[in-house]
Length: 389
Ligand code: NDP
Ligand code: MG
Image (tube, rainbow, N blue to C red; front, side):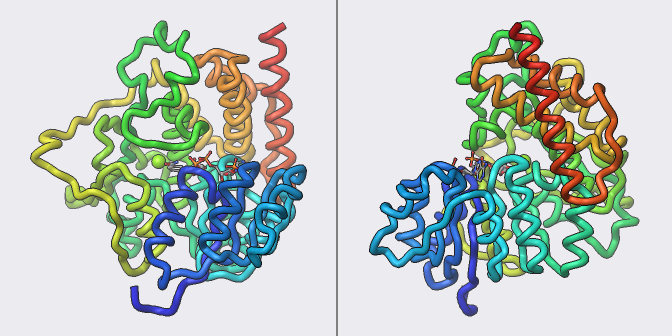
């Protein structure tokens, strides 16, 4: 890349996507200037990244770790800050490009700050978009921001979709690996442990998205994400299981042409696409060895074994408050499963119970979204407590 350095902020730098983003940036020191880096509790990872990249600012979400961060950064010249508000303020700083890689709805305020600033936001944090939905898309338009999809499927669609010929799109086909329990029976899934569930067959990711992949809740969140990112009706977004994770998603046009984006399952490819967009940049990602892969398999998803897909379809149709409830209840249920407070199959049961338990009005503001998110979390916690009692 030969242009002036791009100024960048990475929200969630210590996570899986954050680390991959940092890797690409550190391989191109002339191409980028780091403004702010954020994490929640990993002081050491944050401080090391900030010192190495000579960031202006490092922010830790957990305020009790502020002193530790200050100490880790002392003498480095990197400014330190702490708290959720400070993360949102960091996101509001003027930069060319922001990576939104915080996990969960905790990332919503910072993403919205970055959007309101009108820059380019590379979105990995799907929960933020699922929760805020059209409010986020409206803010992107109102502030002339650019939202680039980092999720591998949505990045693939973005690369294949001709925005000038949307009326000529027959369907979008979202691929799903099927996760570690693709062929497992419901009986077998009933007793799986967090250790088994986080072991994704193709991708190395954070714990929450790994569990979402195992329940296929991830594909449900991605269906809602796709519905907001691309102006294509929900009926024309299909999900197909593709165990090799080589075809990252496809777009079919009315003439029968299907355009797909392929690559090895390495998040650095979609991150690099967003980082260099509208140009391209080198990555160390392996080339696909087609002779070695030799075959690509596709199968219909099984809605009986993976009811999360059926629930997500209901949610995307209902819209309104439902996507925020769906996401919040799932975040609580995944955390409870990781803490061994509920079983694997309970995750979707909790989500459905909370979804069907009440019907708040359509959120008209971000505050409404936060209120819906809070109540759904409380209801999910109550369900989990009642089950344990
Ligand atoms: P990780 O759990 O690996 O990382 C999450 C990051 O967010 C960490 O930097 C963490 O800090 C920070 N964080 C966690 N909670 C909070 C909080 N309450 N406030 C502020 N920061 C917080 O997640 P991933 O990198 O796997 O995923 C990040 C997002 O990207 C998710 O939305 C996921 O769905 C999406 N995504 C991830 C993919 C992947 O391959 N991993 C693929 C596609 C999408 P700390 O380390 O200090 O806890
Ligand atoms: Mg994905």
